Every structure is written in structure tokens, then in C-alpha cells.
Image (tube, rainbow, N blue to C red):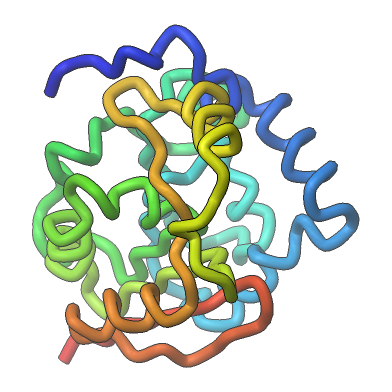
Length: 204
């Protein structure tokens, strides 16, 4: 895939410190809420693949003896994960998840699916379902309004701040868009705790 012309910017996904600082400024003390919510649906005794894992904060909310693997498309986050001693690997997720079938009990993704909505969303969800031995859990920040009317200035700012190496960030889902998207892939929407929605795909 051609490198993204915004790749010299994208400071949010290059620096875990800046990412966490901006998240805290945006959400305040509730910035950890997403980790506590998704934890309720993870089989804690099983193995976990964290897709778009960031700096691996999710690992703090899991049992110590679980098998945890993180994958991310940011080399800055991969460096942070390795410094923490976490198992991880770098991958351009627009090209697929390079893992064997049924390798992890739980495949999870937090607030990242929208990054793929204009590119490889369908193939990424198919890969997650293929790799999961038991279930795929997707938690997404969703909006109640119509994101089509977001200002041009706001979109440009986000593109420069949140650009990844290969792809420019897209707009967030509305709840209805998220629900429709996941249901078309066999997911069940099981929770909406504003601003987060959770969808689960269970392997038969």
C-alpha cells in the first residue's frame, strides 16, 4: 500500500505519551472506562489477541496468567509495548492479520474499527473471526449525531494529528452505523454505555 502523505504528521499514533495525554484531556477520569467495559466480556482464563493494542494498557485489566499478544500498526506503540515486556508484533492491518487460524480464544479491538471503515473493514473483521477460537469482542466509541456534518476544519485537524503510516483516519461511527456494520458480519450488539458500544461474535 502506498505510504500515506500525512505520515510525517500523525503524532497521536506515534507517541504513546501524547496519545494518553490527549485521551485524558478529552475524557478526564473516565478515560479508563473502555478497558473496564470490555473486560466484562473476555474469557479471562483464555488467550487474548489485542488488535490495534496501542501501548498495551488493556493488559493491566487482565489476569496475570493469561496469554496476551498485541498487534499494532504504529512503530512507536510497538516500541512502547516491547519496553513493557509484552509480546507484540507490528503489522499493516490493511494487509491482513498474519496469524494461523484459531490461535487465540478472544480477539479484541478497542476504538479502532472506524480507522478501517473506508478501506479494509470487511477483510479485517473476517480475519478477526477466522483467528478467534471462541469470540471476537469489538468496543467502539460511537456518536449519537450525524458525522457527515462535522466541520471541514475538524476533519483536517484529525487527519494531521491521527494519521497512521499507511492510512488517513476516518470519521467515527454513529451507533446505528456501528450496529448495522457489525450485524452484517454476524455480531450481536450487546451493550451501549454512552459513548461506547460493544459487539460480540461468538464462534460456533
